Image (tube, rainbow, N blue to C red; front, side, top):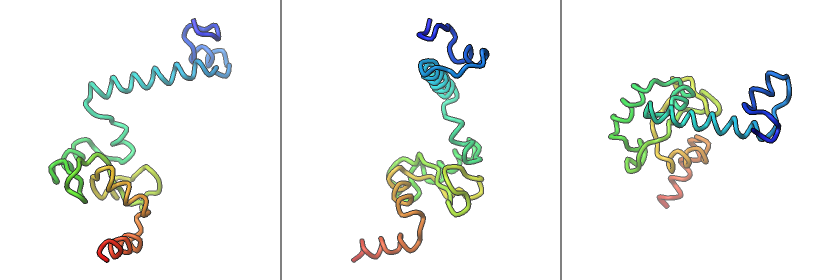
Length: 130
């Protein structure tokens, strides 16, 4: 039994039209996270990654194969991040048409910190060459 006196927690509060207590919220979130991780292990991937970019697993696999699972910029590190044009789709979600490629964490972060700004990227290149 949980501290609030329920056995099933979150759903009992909802059924009784009560605001769920913090302990029940934490327990519910933990359960959902563990279930999602178990499901992802069975699938072999996290389908949420592809859904937020409107991308099919097969298309992702083809993109990975294109550069032998390596980053499209540095061609050294493993490509784990789906990069899209933020001028088309602002934020973390993509329409799927503006996907530019697959990047490693460092290259994805670098482009993000430069805010996809061509002028800033060219200035950074000039700085490095100089």
